[in-house]
Amino acid sequence: MPTSRPPDAARAMILPFALAQFICSYAGTAMNVAITPMAHDLHTTVFGVQTTITLFTLTMAALMIPGSKLTDVWGRKRCLVGGLLLYGVGALLAAVAPGLGVMLLGNALLEGVGSALMIPPIYILITVASPDLAVRAKYFGIVSGAGALGAATGPLIGGLITTLITWRASFLLQVLVIAWIVVLVRRLPDPARPDPRPHFDVTGAVLSAVGLLFVVLGVLLSTTYGWGAARTDFTVAGHVLIAEGGVSPVWPSLALGALALALFVLHLRRTERAGRTPLVHLRMFTNRAANLGLGTQTVQWLVMQGMFFVTAVYLQDALGYSAVMTGLALTPATAGILASSAAAERFARRRSQRTLIVGGFVLTVAGTVTLLALGATGTGAWRAAPGLLVAGVGLGAMLTASVNLVQSAFPDRDQGDISGLSRAVSNLGSSLGTALVGSVIVSAAQPGRHPYAASLTVLVIITVAGLLVAVRLPREPAPGG
Image (cartoon, rainbow, N blue to C red; front, side, top):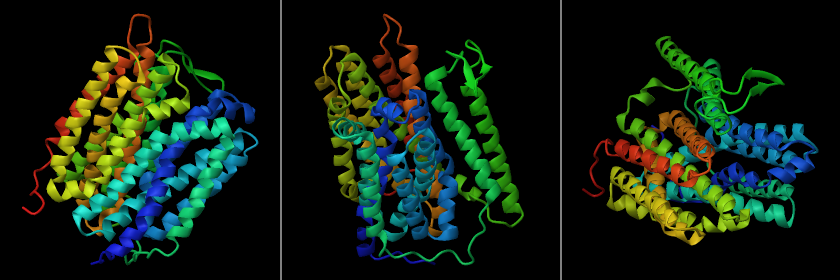
């Protein structure tokens, strides 16, 4: 049985891992405030730049499971370094891109593939290097907090860089950070790969990637076309496939994704029966605690990204805030997430993971309801601060606990499987949060309606649903009990 690394080795990993998670999360939100100048400099349209940003998300989400499995084939450190190098080359190409084609290659393809290769090893290596559950919670808290910080400060930092220098400097910043991470991880030990080295399931990788691609794409299409009748013509290569008023393209995309994922599961069953190694072992889906934990992870990322998105839209559209001022106004949520993430080890030594997840959901419901109540009594960014702070504390507490619960439910030999699933559902939740809130804002934007309140109400309902999932988690002995 593989042995865990000493605590010193685990501690040495945290800075580069936190930086890697930060930069990936930052990349997912920073460019949203630079779409117009990017379109001008790349001699393209706003739609072209938005497509690039969307394809980055799609590539990363679709390849997260295959990327995680490759850690068992190529080695965890090799996947991490390879992903970092691909990401760095992609960011450099994006920084010097003369047109949309190079931007698509650098940002959407290379950065997306690089993210899918380097993120799963982070969570695997923390798990196998930290045998103590509380210490593991501490490290997951740091990495999760860095991810939340990157997502929250992306518009602020991206807006500042774009305003003071150029949007290209934002990509150069990513290159510098990636180079720093590569230097930091060079001396980290590389755990032994399984012996014999497992076969990589190409068919499973294709089916899972296609399924997740169409599911996430369908979710993202909802912002433009809605969930019911299509708000506008759906065109591909200049040809109208679905006319305005027809069924939204969201549903054909989701149906194709569901079909591919169903075929994926059938393929896994046949592969295991034939005695071959599948992309994901079916035993991953028989652990009740892990399955419920994956459900709470999905809801948590949905609510966090949805809350950031709807608050940002409200501050910019209703109050006329700049991207920089909007980023500053979101600081209470970021501070709450960082505070509870920093206390993850102390929490884990005193309370069970189930208790922390349930308590996190309760705080998030309270914070979101506070946002909704104070927003209804008047305008002003200060009214959002109490709700953002409380919700941030709740999100930070349960994000760390959910990751810890899911990853810790399986032995080292299954970390390549569960890490990919965990990262895939987190990406799905993030995409669903932005898309769902965005579609509610658009549908409720008629005179006399209140899109901000409607979006927050939807988030409250979803958070309560997540709380109901959390209370079904199996009870576990309290630490020290």
